[in-house]
Length: 147
Length: 147
Image (cartoon, rainbow over all chains, first blue to last red; front, side, top):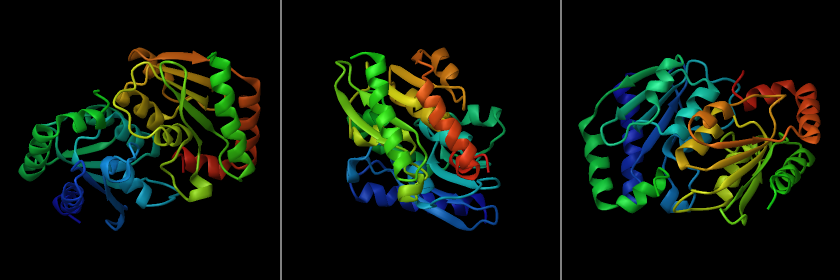
């Protein structure tokens, strides 16, 4: 499966989150063979649950796994420290990132610790977040603990 | 509220997790005034949910918060990278840790980034984890992504 195809599923999740009135960030976790293990999007608004960022939602949807070696997390936005910590702790091998222009998380830290980082700089991911941050700055700040 | 009292609630949660057949790690999040905001324990076994470590469970139980400035997370065990990332991203100010003998997570990293760390080195927390790791090494490795 190509990186762009992995990101496309994450982007579908982000759009679904936006349509629900939520924070438009999506993610999907893939096995070493490219099989989809889990997908999800930020659910702060929808469920009142601050623990479900896009990456943690995709990780949760994948259920219990014995190992994450060889897996790839695709996400529409550079992962925050919370989600970067998830990737490092569980040994997720690769992260495919839609964009890091509107928010720069911990992906350089992950790269220093052996995680393969692919930054696609996707225009649609940028536009989605740029519009969201402009229209809902309070919600965005809450979601990244910048309150 | 004293640090030992904050840890006592986290330890109650860890014992509850053990009684349910789960990973015996508990946590509790307190506001700047010492009020309990949320408490919880690891739910990997109980819910089949790998995203709920003790700290994320307590964070989730606290619901949406505008700011975590001045809050304290009490946890029976040194927080893994996932939970350390949570603390850093959301600006939780203090972490009270039961023990770091059986597992050493990211608490030094948090201290370098301005989080106040209190390590209580509690004998009961140590015994709880030492016995669990001895009796269920596979489950423990799964919970920290060491598979």
